[in-house]
Structure formats: C-alpha cells, structure tokens
Length: 93
Image (tube, rainbow, N blue to C red; front, side, top):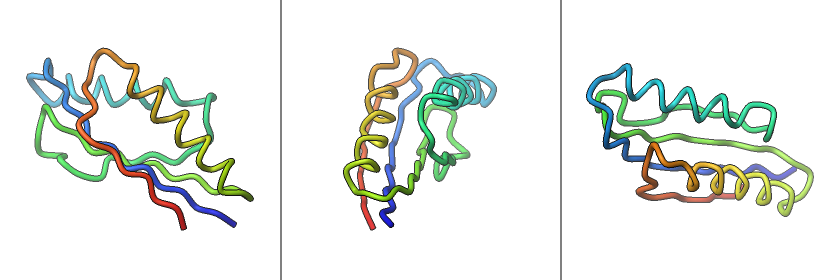
C-alpha cells in the first residue's frame, strides 16, 4: 500500500472577503470531483482571505499510480486563473 500527500499553498489575490475565498476553494473541489479520487482539506490560513493551504491525499497499490493521481491534481490547480500557486510539496509513505 502506498500513500501520497500533496500540500499546496495558494494566493487568491482578488478575494476581498471570506465568501470570495470560499467560492474559489469550492470551485477547486467541484472541479476535482469525478476526475480524481483524492481526499481534500483546507489545512492552514483559515483566517486569511487571500491565502489558502490545501492538503490532498491518495492511497493506491503502486507508487506510480499514486504519483500520477497527485500530479494530475497539481496540474489542474496550476492551470487555474483565479488563484496563484505559491508552493507545493509531494510526500510518499
């Protein structure tokens, strides 16, 4: 069994309130639904309107499959225009 974790920090420059931030995060969540099988949670910066940290996890029978899934999540978020990717970290267990 292989477990992969992807930690992503985002900047949401146009968010002027919590509602605007939630719209972007919900859009990311809905955009991933049905495309990839990952768990998602907001893991930091809950008190900041223009910053977000998201954690994604995936479990699979091979590291290659887990890595491919997390790379797909990364590419989907990296291609978004409503937020900027500040940093990311892949971890495998």
